[in-house]
Length: 129
Image (cartoon, rainbow, N blue to C red; front, side):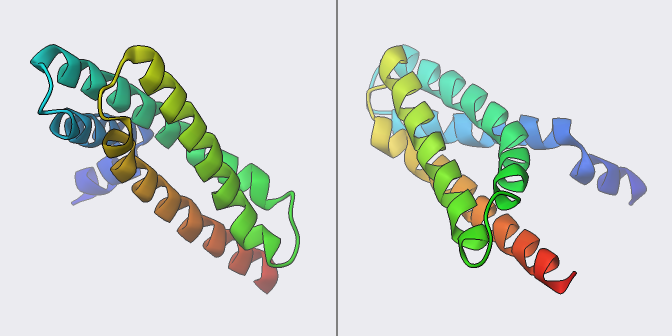
């Protein structure tokens, strides 16, 4: 059980999971195109998801400290979502991903949900102190 806890707390495990899960989603989203294009979309999305997973938590923490009141709850996830959307669309367009919107839909939903929940928990914690 201790090993499971260590893996669950490991940043490397989170990054690898993001790479595999979202990379696989991108391959699926682009399955109607050539294997090469679908595979490239998977590698690109996997790499982007791994990087975004690594930096999203820190970005929300940083941004949450910059806002007061209700903005501390909604502004960090909104900024993170807009930044993630911009990065994902730009990199996928440059790499030639055929189905950009399908490819980024699930990763954006997951990351925005996480950012919203984490921002909420940070805001509540700060208000209790």
